[in-house]
Length: 139
Image (cartoon, rainbow, N blue to C red; front, side, top):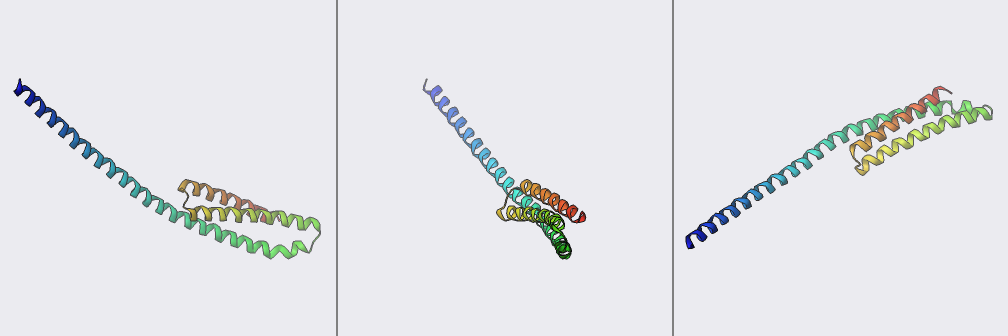
């Protein structure tokens, strides 16, 4: 009877040791995977962020060019009647909205917002810049 208890104790101890080793190895694998995912995600976000900064610079350059165009025709419209002034102000309002959208992209990048959020803001800013350009062309 004693030998069977001793044998049962040895096999139980061995089983507990093996399960413990398996749990330690699986914990290390899970921690390594999570660490790898975080590092990979940060690298991807930095690359995406660089592209987004380039797009922001393009948006700002387009806005500056359009703003110069608006300022060059300002005196012509302000010299006209009230309808001309209203038409110019409405078009200029579209330019102001485009500037606000561009500043929104800048603030999202500065705050470190997720890439998809910044991308949607860039798309919105491009739309507003296009509508401002259309408003200028309709002057």
